[in-house]
Image (tube, rainbow, N blue to C red; front, top):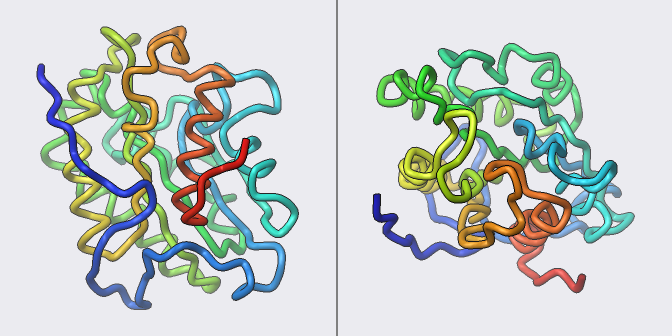
Length: 229
């Protein structure tokens, strides 16, 4: 299946309204009581599977951002974005913990496990609906966090465990549309990893260097700057 490239900023997208207006500009730490609290929502790739211990992309992001920021990892291996999936993120304890964290920024990177055939059967009916529902849980928090959506990570070669690149790519325009509709930040993690198959040894989980690629993309999305390391 040919994948049509989509031109995206690593950090930005457009406009619309939420109950509280969102913002796609870089996050200014000076506007928050330090440190800026960042919640990372995701599956095994966020949890750190594939990377060395202590080198998940949220951990490496923390190193890049420094002590003016506090990054917390609420990734849970195997979880799906869709509530009709075989292991919905919204039913795992990390979801409850993520909502209880008084975040200034929430980063969402889900969708990889939704490409498994048994989950993909629900895609047309549930994916966009459940994505918007997940976002609403965070936009309604008392801390009123900024929300950034990540395009789901690139899957190398023919994938693994039923997880595959063609269905991953199918999610891209939908996530882009949601970000545009709700005026949320959008981070092109997919484009950052695309073609770097050597950084994804099991075809799904980036290794430590691959996690660094994700961290750099997220860093640029949050700050508008290129990571120095």
